[in-house]
Length: 320
Image (tube, one colour):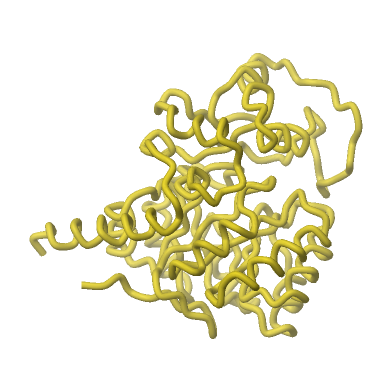
């Protein structure tokens, strides 16, 4: 019994597992390359990087694997166009775009022979994406980490989006085990996207303190907080997040104008960078709702083998 492959346009991954693109500087070249080499689809998070930084990460990852590599870039970032073009120039296989909708990115990708995969939170946006030429869509539920575009559970959204489009649909949010993968595939998805589980791996560019936050988190520690992007965000509670909940916003010392639209309650790019540098007290540690079920920090190769074994065990235990 084998997990099915995942085909997105002209690209096929041996396993139907997409590693989520986690910014800032969590999903970098080493993680994406390891996932692609293990048979999944590896994504480098472009948001928060300069175009030349992203290009260098893609170049290094491409040199390390012949597997399927892509980037995840938020439409909300001001340098969205420059980042997409930098990634395309380095030979990415696909671009995943969320936190907004861009018509232009479909043209850029199609002209370059690159697959475009929008993140959607409704059947309406999924239909629009397919009409513009999406190669697949990621349906992300409220269980996901980071910015949330819906208040609904992924498995509740999935049937509506499957009915609305003919392209492959990838389920994201709350997936951390092989049994979770089975549930999503059994519901009709062509694959899954997993962010939080890959944040706590050896190859993740998160610091040890960040990974330990995941390992130690309980369900009560994972909360929804306010983001200046204009969407709610899911994170692990720490002193910084608790101060936000009390309406205590830190002063913005220097604005980089990193977002097209920003509420300017606080500088999110600064807080994400702080967490990535190891300051998990005053930085922002995004995580999905299922992070409380993560209890170790394996290598990507070990994790992928485990996920396949768990999926197989769940499948063999299914009376149907």
